[in-house]
Amino acid sequence: MGSLNFDHPQENNSARMSGPLDLVELRRQVQGHMMIDFITDYYQHIEKHPVLSQVQPGYLKQPLPESAPYNPEPTETILRDVQDHIVPGLTHWQSPNHFAYFPATISTAGFLG
Image 1 (cartoon, rainbow, N blue to C red):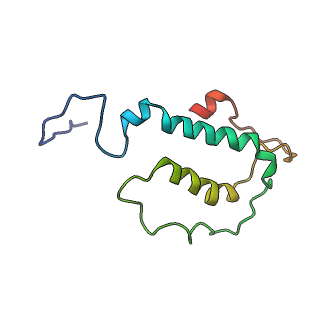
Image 2: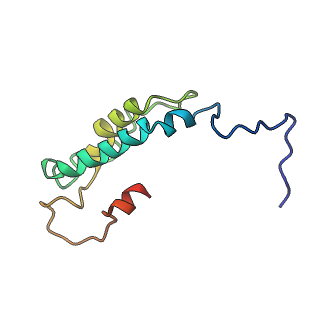
């Protein structure tokens, strides 16, 4: 493997990075807490979701943009999109209303992974 060559000097600043990953915000754990709260809320109320998907195949094509965004979106927007568009298409394997066995990672370590 070859090495990467950069035309500009590398900054040695591990505390902050420009771009889509805001390390200062991540360190404050605001975004991390939002993700964990989302997962926790989902599993606390999983029995309220129908076990099987309630959408037709291809349903996501309509709400999705034609290309990925050029700029990052707030975590709140992403989680709202997951709740509104992704969760309805899931089969909720861990629901107490699902009477079949499918191994899944439902441990705290699995969530964080």
